[in-house]
Image (cartoon, rainbow, N blue to C red):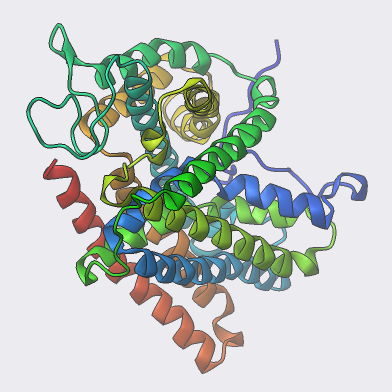
Length: 433
């Protein structure tokens, strides 16, 4: 049996290439573009219509565009910092954690690792919330009444079924039913066995978005189209910023993607085109979803679809997609925890405790979109804005003009202001439901 290498402080958090791959294995421009899409686009897109309902469709589009531009700048700061440090003699910077180590030593790497672990664990909490709410909706016997606060309604305003069995809500029951299955999945030590599901995930995501868009068009064309608002007030902006940051989250994969690209000098352009494409898709999906369903828009927009074989199949497929993605997202968490508490050896106890903790948190949080906003505002601002700006200032200080320094300082201010405001707004939303 092969022994597992014990991670050290210099070990990358995410699985990376140990050394620059040979030219035959480098990614083309097209493949890099596809990998960027896979790394960024996820289930968070299904919470955008609800976010547009909270902010207004025009406010939502403005916020989404602004966050896309800032997120792109933050990601490029990592690439520019890496290239500057390599000119200074640092040769092995293949990941976000490596960059943190090159800039601030073990403390820098520990900060990056800690925040990435929180981010990945938060993503998995969102997955469980999505699966619990969606399965509750699919397997109920009654037609839902959206956004009804009546005690007779089996739904709260976010599509979470409140009917109980032995004192346990259906959402909680489904989440606990998933728990032992994920424990079994956590025992898979070779992630290559799960790789084929990435193709399945892409097909499911595209199918779900097309299904929702078709339903949106039918609702918009109907005579009874709901009233919508362009602006709902400035108080909702931090909430929208948090969800948008989550939707564009993927900063931890940028350096590995750049490392694997053949024509590295074109990476910034490819990333920019990908961001424009994603922003257009996100904006159209969020706006059309809100315009179609108005104030009845749910935190998971697929819950607004009519109950039939096609929509049920799409939603079950989405749940399967997230179920198989769950252990992939937790792999960095396992790597850090096992590296620190079990000398890098496989520990079923650590993995079980991790999944149990994530399950409990997902049960306590009712709304999918609210949790997306919380993760985006708290962790996303740190990973996507604060760390890149701080690392860039430290790595390139002697090369930066006043404009560059001002831009990085503004990014830090933006991250702090909206990080605090969005976190507070999200917690208020969660605690008042």
